[in-house]
Length: 270
Length: 289
Image (tube, rainbow over the protein chains, first blue to last red):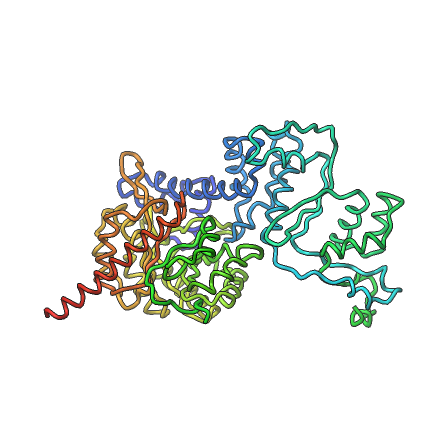
């Protein structure tokens, strides 16, 4: 008599496109081949998860057409099934998967369009956050400002691409009957994607502003983020950039780089 | 008074689906209660915010599809904690889950998969139900699944398995009458005998939904797709369930090819009428006796 763990492990393999022979031996035919009964379940697993991916990546689906999307989704579901039951969290690895899929090489921008759609999905379901007012900065001692870090609104993604993915996305909305022609030679873009109220929005940022916000979002302190911004544009001015960062409501908490252990008193000042 | 915590006068609820949210917020239709899928509300953003508004007007039932009570690998404690937080926030009238499993080897298979009904499964599901009830601070309703396969080694009949689960854990049962019909038809069993084998006092909720007929190798297989009106045969079985269990909170479920809200409300009225008829018939039988 097999253990429940064995039975579930065998069914999992059969439902994710692996060998279904062990699972077949556990199943009663009841007038059908056991394989046909397992196929009913496999069909449901694949079609419902494909629908989840299609809803999250509608522009990718439009770019490759539904049949190819279904093929790609089927492969993806096998190698990276959902890790949990909240399906709005499923698809984080889809862009990387598409980037490695040989059949997608003729669409070099496809993976970045998927990254944009994933960032929009993340933004829609991110936890609600309360923006930090800029007066929170007033309590920071000047000599500690350089090592200050800022936690940002969890709905925000800063995404750069070598391709004009924002224009590709807009040209491929469902209400655009004839997608406009986008010239890949137009060059790349640097996007800030976030939720505002109930809506997900994105916009292109200038290179130094993107570098500054991207560095802060990645955990860099103010000194490090400023250096990144200056590398993008020597004319970068920290004051207005920081003011705009707060005015946009991105920072939600202050912190410090953990480079100076035993230097705790500053925590209470923040 | 916030109605979130208990059912009001209406016995019949409908499943709240995204296309109907703004209409329900605007029109406040006369429906007894609303059921949502727990896992759709465990993030932030517009969906949980809309639920916060809806719960001020309607009692809510949280119907989970992700606890995977039958997983041999154990309950996902992090997921259970998220469900607990949502229960605290929504104060639902009912909290339900399924007699099934969906997670194995770290993969969530997005299907309410069948269990072999053995002593091992009974002990495992019983322990998981007890753990979930402890974490949520309230009894669960556990729903009978729709099935397309049975295991060779599955010696305990499903209704007896559910009855014993309720006896051991104090959980209630959610009797999905459409699932009873679908499973029994798929395995040439008698759905009335199935209902008769459930402990009436433990049944705390009923689900009704439509199903599809598919053909596999010349054999008709019923698929529980929640994509159409409740079939006449399931309405007849529902009348039998009401006769046996008494009136119970009843849900109209619709998940694929979702129609206009009026269609769901129409099905809900039909269920209300069945409950009224059943109560009246029960009273007249009592008088005649």
